[in-house]
Length: 135
Length: 391
Ligand SMILES: [Zn+2]
Image 1 (tube, each protein chain N blue to C red):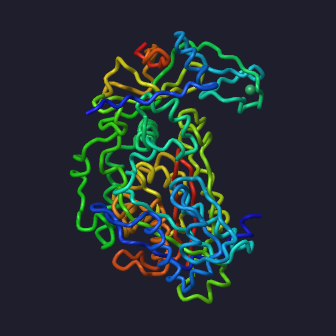
Image 2 (image 1 turned 90 degrees about the horizontal axis):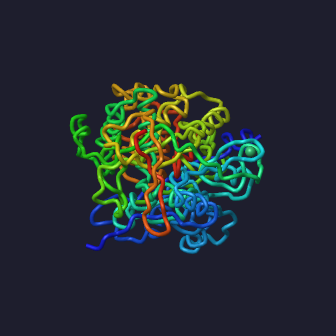
Image 3 (image 1 turned 60 degrees about the vertical axis):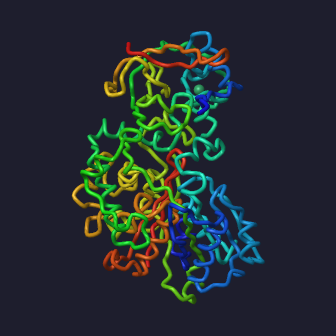
């Protein structure tokens, strides 16, 4: 049976910029220049104050587990064979939340509040994804 | 105000439903399947198809123009598409009520149905169709690369967090599955009729995406249903007991296109829609005789019971325990068996069942003296809709 690849992000516009920073080994989030609010996922405008001015600000890379699910049966063929694995929501110190995985933690040891830090995994020449490990 | 415009001004006057099945499949196109249900609903209303002048089709499952051409609706004046996934059939009650109350249409048809088993499987829809939901591009770019690929996985994140905050347990989810299955034993048309379920069997069912086991997940079935709405005035001249739309509302979580960064993680569309609908209807959750709640997965029933105001947030687990949502309990939920044990009719089956109950046509599963019922819808990343109906 042919291997079906895992889905990858489409590196266009702001999404491309976000993953471009990941490719350089940096997790960055947009921060509004006017009101200072961080945001994720990337958007053109600040929902708090409607400002179009923002910077890509480097994250501390630290956060805590907010919630997760343990996938026992893959629902996309690209993940068949990876089970059990856990998509995890990480709440970053900046306040935004990121969906990823904590790669060095067996799914049955995950706990809400568990401290984690970002690490980067190059999937191919173009795409580097932000994962997490126990801090 | 909207509440004065539509409260009690519109009625459901016709319902229709096809048989439901898994193997070998309906053998019909999805359009033909929905047309069957539509014809049945129009006939149930005592109308002729040519009198239908408004159509609200389910997104991606047929165009209003195609229904009109097929059915012979020669004077289609009103059509709209409501992009709320499984929340659409109940959200359409409000839109249909507004349409007939304003005179934009006289008779509005709302069909929904699909080959959910023999065609594109339910669990594959989000993974395969990147345009199917409002947050599709976000899911593609930020969820799917990490293995979060389909609705049960999205909602499992909410269920897990609820368990952490409020102590909701697997047995609470199981109580929902058991209640739906118990009701299906009283519905000969339900797919799970003749297949009762115990808590032991529920807990032993294979894990899909923790905390969801196989038996926390809705069925995948072929089938269709439809209803017809008209003004209260016209309804009185038709054959069946008119079912009044007392209140109806729809709402969205914030942000609706992204799940993780919600300031209030448990706030869903229903959180704002339900108080609006109850205020419009002039009744309270405690006045309701039954609720047909969109049950894509078991936890979503608990969450909607909370957010609709039947109990406080965090108390839903205790609410569904000990037969609380079974017939004879404090709030019978999904008396037909729901998506979990009757069939996946995209939420339109819940409207049909609410009408049957209020007409007193529910047979063995009839809620005694049912006068007021609630029906909800849930779709996409937590869009919500609700209608409060009376006979
Ligand atoms: Zn701002």
